[in-house]
Image (cartoon, rainbow, N blue to C red):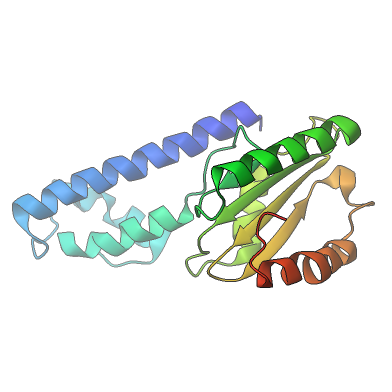
Length: 195
């Protein structure tokens, strides 16, 4: 799947969830959370909601957990930057400095590193989420798969490197683990997120 198609799909998912949130808010305000869901209106979607989320929905108020679950499944669309601070932990100067550093290294090696800092996994599996992000973002040069996504989950105190196939022989799982344990973790413990 091309980056263009992946971006369009992710943006479309965000649009659907945002529209759902608006419609649910309006329905709750007009009818209240105890209003039963019945035919011919939203009840057509009940088998789909149950199958996709496992949530049984009988009244409007039951849709809020479905909305929250849908939001939790979304990840940001492929970024235009190397440093993507969705948690807001870096200053503008820190982001700019790190962006410049990663772009310079990319020019030297052609390998692309993208950093994604999130507030939390919101209870989701780090492995599943990071793999979905890496597959959707498709970091690295086409045909070379020479990209790395460095994911940071601040509140969970977790980090992960997703390595493209083209770099797996160089940046092995063992080396990635060593980097995270011996280089990244000590700096993060000292509060040095931008070093």
